[in-house]
Amino acid sequence: MILLIDTCTKFCSVGLLGQVGQLFVQDSLVKDIGTGHAETLPSLIQDILQKHGLKMADLEALMVNVGPGSFAGVRVGVATARGLSLALKIPIISYTGFDAYLQKAHRNNLMKEGQIITVLWDAKRHEVYGQTYHLSEGAFSFNSPPQKEPVIWHIDQLDEVIKKAGANLVLGAGAVHLPVNTGVTLALIEELPTTQWMIEGTDLDWVKNCLLKASWHPSPLYIRPPDAKPSVKLWEALSFDD
Figure 1: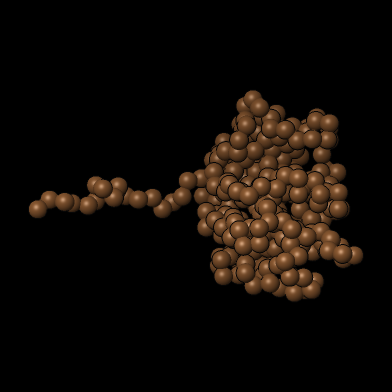
Figure 2 (figure 1 turned 180 degrees about the horizontal axis):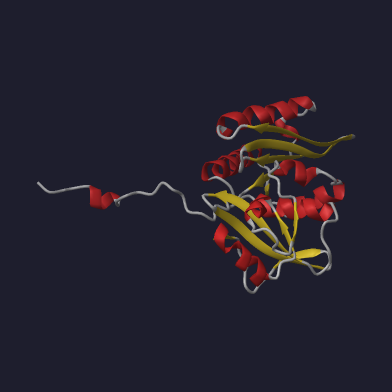
């Protein structure tokens, strides 16, 4: 059984996916809270386990959204997954918000072979996080050149960025910032809990494939540096003069 965790957006969500004995579970619980993920997440995990008569010992892996998102939200989800992984001695499967949008679009048959797809994640402050992919032979690869890693763009750059990438399909809530009449297809532009997207339409083969990708050290995908930065180095702030 896999426990899914997502605290990267205004939603705090968890999910269960897998089989224990003859019981196949495919479910999620969501709270639209805005803030307070650290206080909400533990009880939400307890609630979904109790709902299906399961215990922590029934878990064989964790799946966590590592970002992008708010700095605090990403940190809560990744830290919780790491803590549970150490306590239960089970591995972690990492996924990103970009992965979730691609997964949802692929399962809903919104993509075509050979398409260039850009996923835009609303980063607030008139900015978006973006990543561009190429769909070839049913598999996704980063569309490079020009882009290998997620980046942050100002919304005024989007029209130029999309044209340069050659994208003909744009996914994600950040797409609302695109100018009108850009000539590309928009889909899945709402912000929803990714745990629901990752489990819907799945089967045991998909679960087994996920377990093959599990690791012990998920890395958060912040993209934007934290707002809080030390104003001065400690050794510069300390004075040892008599």
